[in-house]
Length: 239
Image 1: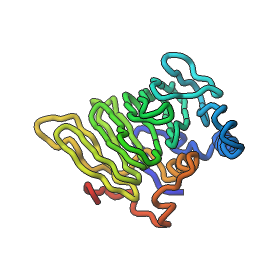
Image 2: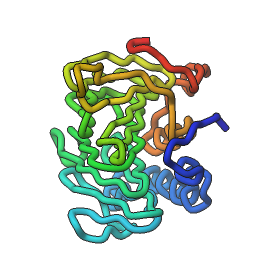
Image 3: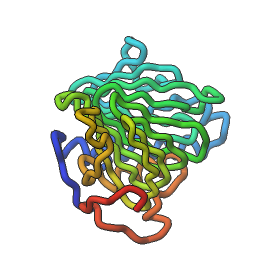
């Protein structure tokens, strides 16, 4: 198990992949996909729902689907794991986000995170973004963790766990190329200070990314290379 640092999150929130319920749900999801395309298309795309979540203001049921264009909100002590096309998402408790449609109903063009946190793995594609109140990330095929700290003036945390991401906050713009956790804060623009500042990896684990990648038939960069870096390091941009 990789070491991880928590900031305002509980151990249980980042260790969700150890739950028996999730392991059973993930196994069922994978098995259903292997039964053939017709069966796979007929199933919902919710891998696991624990607690309460709403889609466009209506309560979400486990057998239902999340589609592009939906606004999704999770309640206290709740978690939601779902797949859209070649991308997988895990919403933590008390999270609100909008998933905007791309070229097709199964393609996400934009994930607008209003509050809370989401772990996401994205297959290859073009013109995808994650937007928070203080940060915009243009992503390609990658795995990332994003969190909005509403109690800190909507300060945003973003970790490019692996992949290539174009980051913008205020007047700052940087290219992040990562094979193992390169994180930044997107700060509210104040007094001319830098809006993008380096950060440590917090509130997420390697295993979370690995399980989400597995749901969409992918592997993380460190699984492919067989090599990890220092998860506790603070990296400069482009490193």
